[in-house]
Image (cartoon, rainbow, N blue to C red; front, side):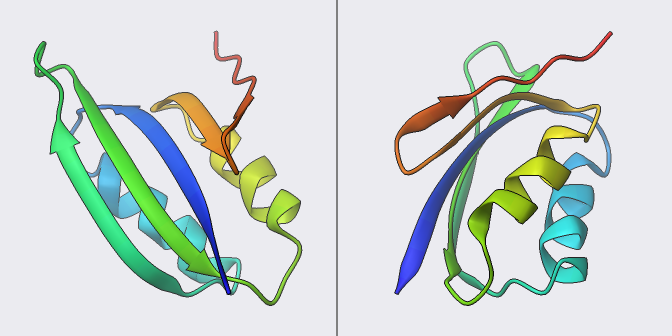
Length: 84
């Protein structure tokens, strides 16, 4: 079974690669990935399904730490992301 994670990132060089690196380093496997630039071109919307096997909250906590992350939700529940 997989879990859906939706992330809005600043569209900076390497932002998507950093997101995927965290997923890989935390031991999760991507089942599907869809990414598109939003209209203002300053943001990137990413939807991905990761395979179950480890607690999803561990991955969410690490993704929320990325400076580029502006919005994060899992299982259709928004998760608060605060960056200075």
